[in-house]
Amino acid sequence: MAVFQSKYRELSFYVNGERHSFSSGSFSTDDAEVIAVLEALVDAKRVYEPEKSEDPETQPEEKPEEPESKPEDKPSTRRKASAK
Image (cartoon, rainbow, N blue to C red; front, top):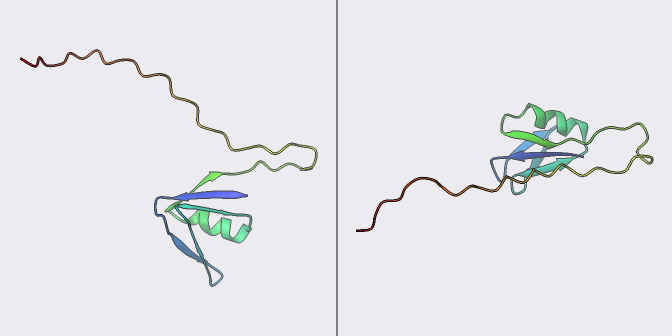
């Protein structure tokens, strides 16, 4: 399944005369024609693409990668103005 994100919450587009819409800025599909149209859209970005395997029963399903946690922020070394 391909997942697409848009900066617009309710972006709509047509494929073969049929209207499709993003919901809350996200759209997912397995349809190859819809995927082709979405990849051509400037306002849509593909965020998840499953890896294709020859035998899906032998390989476990993989979840989309989670973003790595950010390192802890160091306290600021800037001096603060006096409150006098």
